[in-house]
View (cartoon, rainbow, N blue to C red):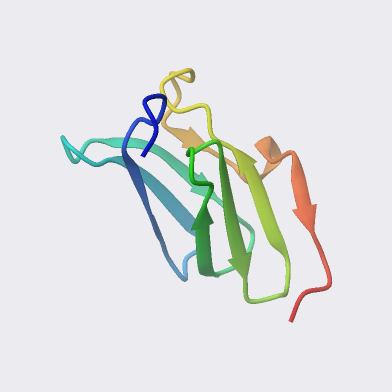
Length: 87
């Protein structure tokens, strides 16, 4: 863990959501909503990016600015990157 990391963890769901939590307090920091079920997630070691794999072969890449955004609910339209064609 780096000094810049905020100690977060992420949960995912078949309903297409990922929730970003603060590890020490258990506080919900953000909810991300995707158009399809999320079956795999990976968090960048410095907690800068979240990679969310979906059942349709797309991998959604979200820049995590935890603490910089007031809105706890972020939709797919807020996504910057989608990697397609994965199986």
